[in-house]
Image (tube, rainbow, N blue to C red; front, side, top):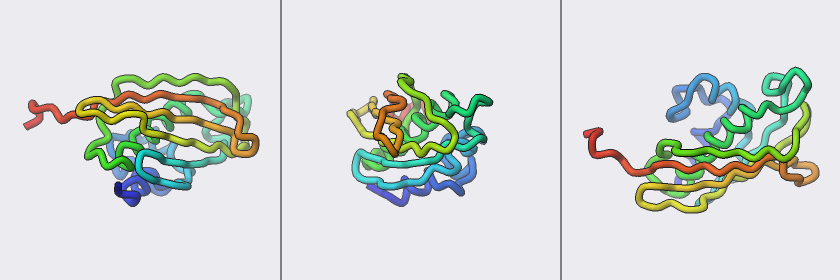
Length: 150
């Protein structure tokens, strides 16, 4: 496990070029996310819902939650010593509550399985103050390197 690789991937100051496979939108979303812990198969982060990632009604945008599930799910593979963050096969997100501007959210991403070609991660979004589940994601990635790339 390389905690520094995880930190470099998620640092709030990272540019789109520093975040492997990211877009400018990904770096816009990941900005402000604090890495709390990175251990083998687990990444813990937190962030405060700000107006720039909220709807006009003042609630965290669902697309931001999905993007964070993608980015933090990928970071878990780095924390697990898997040599690649892979390619997303499926991301599903269940939204069970809203988060308003000013609320602090804690995100815990855990490795469920990393096989030879497929890996699965769960990503839980909780309101830090109450511990109430806000959203839950499952991220499945293809991890094997294609022989056609060589």
